[in-house]
Length: 104
Image (cartoon, rainbow, N blue to C red; front, side, top):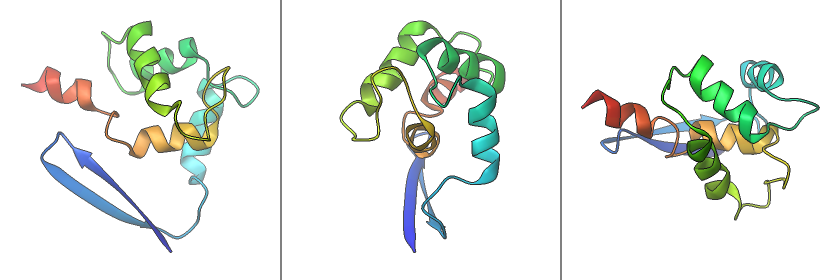
C-alpha cells in the first residue's frame, strides 16, 4: 500500500494511504469534464482552476506554472496533463497555494 502526503497552507501535512495506484473514480470523472481526448491543455487547466476550485483570478501563467512544476516527472505530456499528472497536482503542494495566499 503506497502513501501520498501533501501540505495544507504550509502548516499541516496530511498523509493518506492509497489502496490503489490509480486515481479514484471521482477524480477520473472530474478529469474527463475538463480535458479533451485524455489530455488537459493549458486552457482546460485554467478553466478547472476558475470553475471548479473557485480561483477566479487564475491566469494562463498560473496554469503554465503548474505545467512547469510537473515537467520533470515522467508522467508529463508535452501537449498537457494526462490523468496521472492531474492526480499528482491535486495531491501536491501547488494545489491550493493561491487560495491560502488569498485567505490571509
